[in-house]
Amino acid sequence: MASSYWPEHSPPQRRWYSLVSHLRERGWTVSVVCPVAHYGAGPDYSTQTRGRAWRRQAGFLGEHIYRVPYVFLGDNRAGKLLDQLVSAAASVARGLFTSRQNIVVVTAPSLPLLASALLVARVKGIPLVVEMRDAWPNLAEDASLVRGGSKSVVNRAVVYVQNRADLVVTVTQGFARTLRERGVHNVVTVRNGILLERTPQLPPPPARRRGLRVLYLGNHGESQSLDRLIRAAHLAGDSVRLTLVGHGSRKPALQQLAHRLGANVEFLPPEYRERVFERYRDADSVVISLRDDWKSFEDTIPSKTYEVLAVGRHITAVVRGEAAHVLTDAGEGDIVASDPEQIAALWRALEADRSRLVPSGSGREWVRHNADYADLSVQYDQHLRATVREYSRVCGQGVLPRLGRVLRAVTRGVAGAGSRESPFTARTADGGAAQGRPAAEADSGTPDTDHASRRQGVADASRGSVERMAS
Image 1 (cartoon, rainbow, N blue to C red):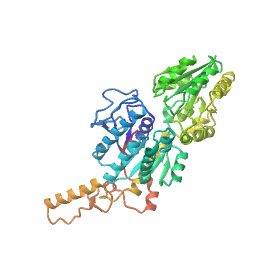
Image 2: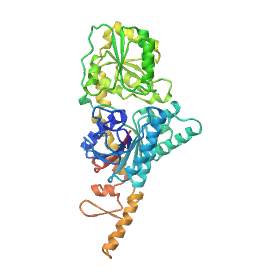
Image 3: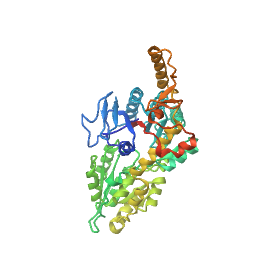
Image 4: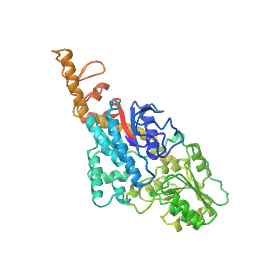
């Protein structure tokens, strides 16, 4: 369950579109509950691909997409919150009446959706996986999204869902540690990443070229503080050309700032696929940026980091915490303080000594071993199967399974009095009875084992189906 999915173009869409393709190859059937596409249109966006509310849509990867309504009132905090509330409420209704699943996965940062997923999982009687792609509720406090009494309510609501999830997945090790220190159990980390086989390794930039070409590609929002880059470009002079590609709530203000300063900055709309790699090819240095006055960003890694490491471009890293640690470990880029003068000084030094722009190649190898979705999907598959095996509730604990049992009992009583088969018995695929086993496991022929053997049998677990909402 999520708030964004194909044909939108967003970090959760890119992550889960990559994961779904590999999970499908590993035997999972996938149902995606998400709003009608309406924000961040990607290259495949059209009136046909965006879907229709309350309709099922076939995805290109073999997944089933269940669309719910939305309310879009603008790219601002209030508008986004209302949009998420409407979609989350509709997702409960839609999620309850999809086909049978083994597990529910919800991907944040849509906070209302966390509650919706918990309700769907409990009613259906199946385990819940909560994926925290951002450091909630810490980020809500840093961004002043909630104040006063509402702050404690939101914090408690998020913590409530995290504590009741059967598994919590983070995308950074730092936030996983934070959750464990907070008392959340069953926390694992599955990084963001890229499909390395589809990501080219580019030749280094020209050894001789007039000026320095700096590229930023991504969201233009509050989290990135891109005004620092514009001020740095102004300080560095016309020999540094800054190109900002993307969209976001702060883009109009950034354009006004660049015009007022007379900085050598070019603004471009979002670009996709091969055009992105052409932008990388033309650039000398690529910026990875997060604001430094929000403590939660110490446990945040911009998703573009892995792509830039893989293509082989110098990185101007205006980050700290775990993102800075990843770049240091990968042995690529220059980490610089969040100060326009220091950023400008770095760019002038790179222009003067272009040999510093040549990557060592260690970045791509780091991605190969740590952030390739071909491997990350294996990790996710193992975690999902382990959760189904260890934490699936006994058939009948959920509201819908319990109702199904009652209806089956009534039907059997009417059809043939005297039948000795218990209404509490699930049927295996070969027609045998699986007394006391979860319906999902009985249908797929998974034996009931103790916890120890369940942990050892992750790779041989039964096929399941994933229900999730793309955020």
